[in-house]
Figure (tube, helix red, strand yellow):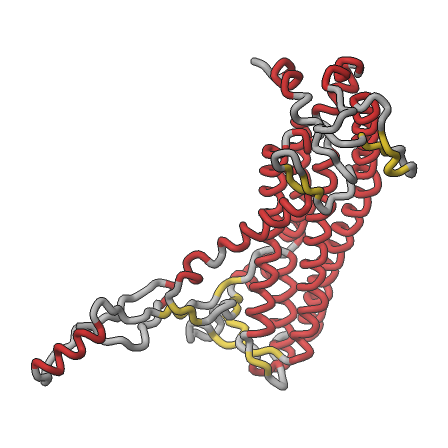
Length: 384
């Protein structure tokens, strides 16, 4: 027979089974009654998560510098000039990182993505005009002419035999439109979206740890505590003032979240306009270097002393206690579901004889009429 009660915490993130056998002092009728009540029952288990370290990047450095140095200033330890200079240096690196990321994003959209979008629109417009033998409607005239065939692929005007009226270059441009291979393109976009979802998840967990779960205090004097009880060892950020929480949210967390969301959109737009399957993979890899800039600047420009201080600083876990449940073991899969939903809604999808256009604005009112026409072309050009 099993007691049902509070589960034991799992030290250092490990689970301990707290089931105990019921013994002693009960008559047979009591035991039988309780056996019926608890038949097959197991005691709920709860995990108490340990403190977690900050990521070793520019964002983690900024959090560490703000909390550590202002705590040292509050308890009057160390030279104030050194404390303020490190805070200034850390935030110079942070703002420099954010400025470079924003500048690169704007230039990618202006020079790289815009050119790719312009070219793929021209390629698809030419395909529609020829395949529908001129039976098209003008969808847009600026900045490029965009015509769409009347009736779609199953309509009376679509003529597959007219594909050979296109030049070799026009055939290649049409058949290498990413949406012409929807499953392949969906997978590439899904992987790219997962990269961005990982960054959004880290930002969310930092918000929960630093703003929601960290106790609010009136002064930074009690902000840090010795994590292992040894003076001069690792510190945990136990408390923060309201002002410090606002600063961390406005200067660290929100910019990181905003840049990631914008990069997700720009990346999806650029990849959809990439009119070459090989470049599609290379571009998805190249996009990540903007996210990795925070790591590059940290490893290249942060002094060793600051790196050691960051390694010795921990924060409260995003969820201090977590009961055993289905959500605890499978809940994080929802990030993958969110990424899959975003990709599907962004690019749209095609059914049997019908289609749904997504949120993408690269090929507006896309007819999903390229895939079947280009099947033989792909087999011939990509045969080995």
